[in-house]
Image 1 (cartoon, rainbow, N blue to C red):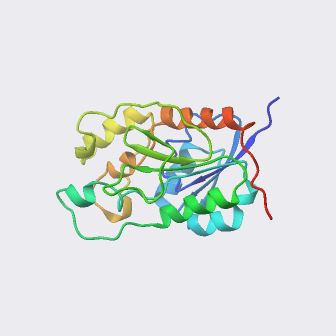
Image 2 (cartoon, rainbow, N blue to C red; image 1 turned 30 degrees about the vertical axis):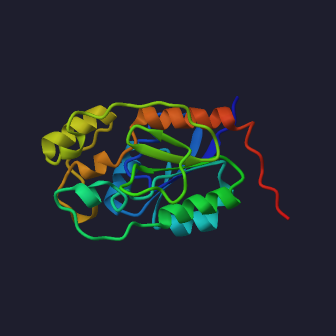
Length: 216
């Protein structure tokens, strides 16, 4: 029987990326307690840590076979510059801190996911799949799950219901991300489960190709 992979799922959100993974022991880190509670209801077999992913990664990366990170995308999104409610803000470059940390220290497979930003990425991604960029130490072949029409404009309860159906993620009521008034935001943040499975399968194919980092 194939041994379970120990997986760290950072900035786990509702766990869209993780939904179809099999034979894994997952530790999920999510800073928002309400989102974490729903993740736990959807994935009762996973260990959920409510806390800061940056600190958790630094102290625990060596315990896991595979690491997935999806840092918050709002400050990188093209909506910062072109959206209706745009305002001046700094892009959160801890995204690149995670990428650099993982490619320097983690000897197993890892991937960092984010949106296509409004600026040229500071570190060149390995792949662009639809609206997502991926940085990783393994190859990811082309794959996309088309988003529903007017994806970015689904900002009410009916839009949230449509996104729940599209993702195959069902829970009661609405969750509001960081106090905003859009019930669909936390769902738009999800990586579609089919895309999450594709990346996971690409990772598994690469396991025999990952070379440990040589230390001096």
